[in-house]
Image 1 (cartoon, helix red, strand yellow):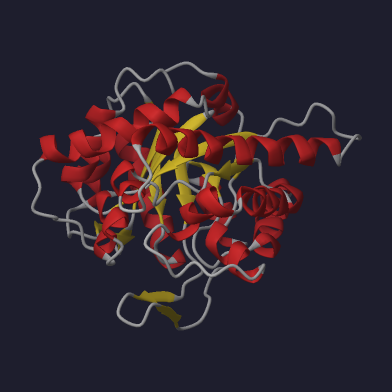
Image 2 (cartoon, rainbow, N blue to C red):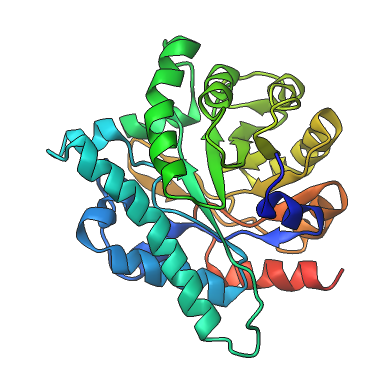
Length: 307
């Protein structure tokens, strides 16, 4: 698919933002909720704009919206009907757009700086809010998953983001459903799996998983996110070789999420210098996911600028 965003990838790399949730938590927001950061779309969208702005000011070129855990079903549980829910999806995109406007206004020395908005669509398991996005294999058919994803992808696409982020996908069945659901929306997309070693979280070989997107015209980048930094390098090589597309890579800090306790364990192992290897082997969208903050995004931007 030809688009301004796809053209920018060709001359990349572009720096993605980091974890929106950790930036919000650092500002004092409690995200212990089934809607996670999407709850602030109903309560405090200005907080989302400020968090996106922090990443743009840190050097990110792309902001990922607070819609990862936003679904019509999840909003309905809060008594929010379809019409208002669609408006909240659009507000997620607009919050990031407003941050981009403020970032450009704050840098009059760079009036031509292009900043991008990626509308996040998390996996089915994110709606369940039980950690199953790290396992996949929900017991649903591809058709059932497609019917779940299509309405919110339509709502996100209607808000005209620069790209759709089909992210943290744990298995091939859900990837196949997303690739069907994104057809004909008129907005490019990237597809990124959450992985463990050289396999999806559901245990499928990455070669087979990435191959699903090789011929998808809507998909302008393929890769991984929400995984250990140590798992990225091999995945980048595989994605580039199998698909011939630009690769997206934005792992976690290296800490591990414990769904039972609802907290993070371990230490950060994210080293910004790793991104130069990822770039060398095909990564054109590089950033961080959970527990990666603005300071690390600045380090990533500097590491890539030194190439």
